Each structure stands twice: as structure tokens, then as C-alpha cells.
Length: 129
Image 1 (cartoon, rainbow, N blue to C red):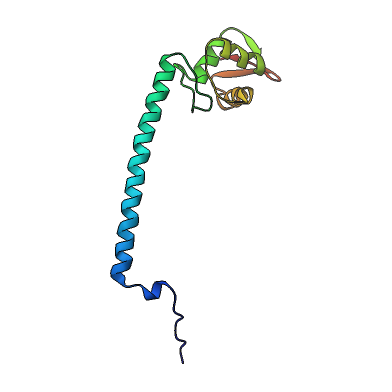
Image 2: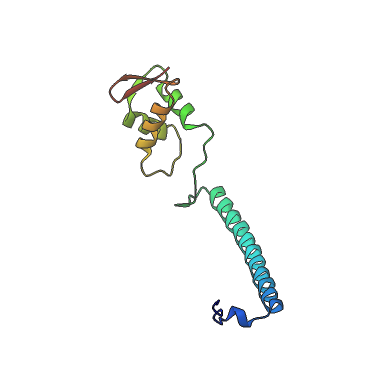
């Protein structure tokens, strides 16, 4: 003999009531998405205004540069040999912008990843190829 299912709150609600609740929650979700889109647009507008004034927003997302890190490093290392730290400092001094708290590590990874553009001269020292 089979067991009789236990009565739960859902078993006492009709199908039409469940469908009505689903529609209600869907409308709430849509309203929240619209609100999110409006707030995001306002936030982006504020960021543009701050940037136009020459300001910077900490944690405001990724930095934007005219050239890639690989190209910036190649330009700095053209005809020179530098350590990873010296290269990172030189790129920053050339105007490259980053929000990375460990930029030196990023530079080191870039050297390792782009062996066709950078030559390892000795331990921790690189030049542009």
C-alpha cells in the first residue's frame, strides 16, 4: 500500500493562485531590472562627469589606456635592459594607468607570457625583442 502524501502549504494552493503569484513576482523582477538600469545609467553619467573634471574614482573599475601593457613595456624597453620593478616603474612614469595593487606581478606575467616581444637577458632582467 502506498503512503498518503503529507499536506504542505503548496498542496493547499490552487494552480491559478500559483500562476498569479508567479506573474506577481515576475513583474517585481522586471521593475527591479528597470530600476537597476536607471541607476546604472546615472552612475555612469556621474563617473563621466568626475573624469571630465580630472577626478578619479577609487575602485571605479578597470583603468583605460591608449596602448596595451605589452606595447607600453616594449616602448619603455626599446634598446634598454631593465628589471621587472624598473620596467613597472618606467611604464607608470610614462603615463600608463592601473588600479592593480600588485602591478609588478602583472608586468612579470606579461614578460613571461609574451616571449616573442620580450627577451630575458638574465634573472629578472628583460629587454624588448
